[in-house]
Length: 177
Image (tube, rainbow, N blue to C red):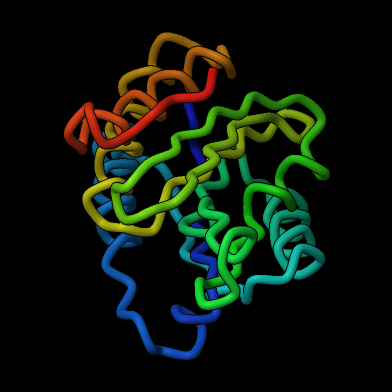
């Protein structure tokens, strides 16, 4: 059972207050339902810079995190168009985690591309959820259901990706397994 979790919102738009953080309260609510005795700490938002995201995750692990939920930064729009936001959470996770699983969704669902990553850093479980509230809620719900069965990283990643995928008309998105 997870007893200490950190919620780590990412994104320049969250850090500078351009976008109101509605995701973290919903994630907190779901984590408390998972374990009412869990200590949950919401960290200050981190800008979209890989080294800053890695450093924030490292500090969480040093502070005893058993779970880190990164919010936002799963898109990669800037890789396709310079007018779209820069997201580096997934790439920071992929370089920092000891073990990981990643799945992508492509489509016209508000994202040109979403990369959801789950993994382990030592004994700490680390997952990311997309920034849009609808997707974040679906992903954290799927996480809560799948983590109760154990820490099977590919299974958790699959469940979270399927939950996000299910939020949109199936003819508008493609999965890359």
